[in-house]
Amino acid sequence: MSGLGYDLDRETALVPLGEGRFAVDVSDCWNIGDNPNGGYLTAIALQGLRSLGHHQDPISVTTHFLRPGSGDCPGELSVSTIRAGRSVTTARASLVQDGRQRLEVVAAMGDLGRVSDGGPSVTIAPTDMPPPEECVERDLLEQGV
Image 1 (cartoon, rainbow, N blue to C red):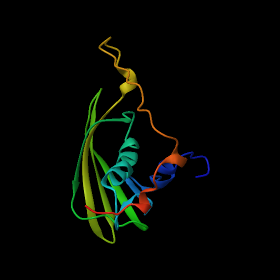
Image 2 (image 1 turned 90 degrees about the vertical axis):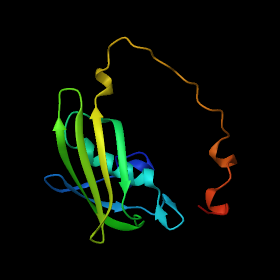
Image 3 (image 1 turned 90 degrees about the horizontal axis):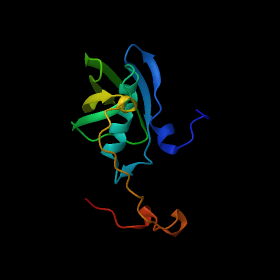
Image 4 (image 1 turned 30 degrees about the vertical axis):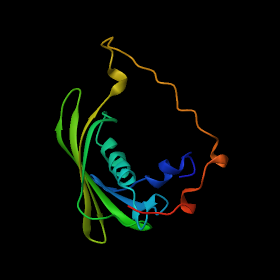
């Protein structure tokens, strides 16, 4: 995995196990308290959904969190196509850790590069933020939900 350039790329990387099944090492670097952030777990599921075909861009994603995920714990992701169309594929993903399903994702995947209807385009300037070395470290803050 040395070719991957960003932490999130490395920490959502999947190892193929066979048709629609992947091994994943869920990192604890994205934890909130004792459990991985839900967006991080959803990002893992989206990596698997991208493997299903030419529709690589999530258009609509619904994640059902059935129980908390476990950081620093291996898991298995299963993905399958519900319906494949010309412009949108609807698919599902399921993450299991320690023999228990943690989440179920249903997503509509498309190809945003094919959008060429001449519709409106909006460009928003990035928020002005201090450099990372001037930011307060999150682990120094009191945690709570």
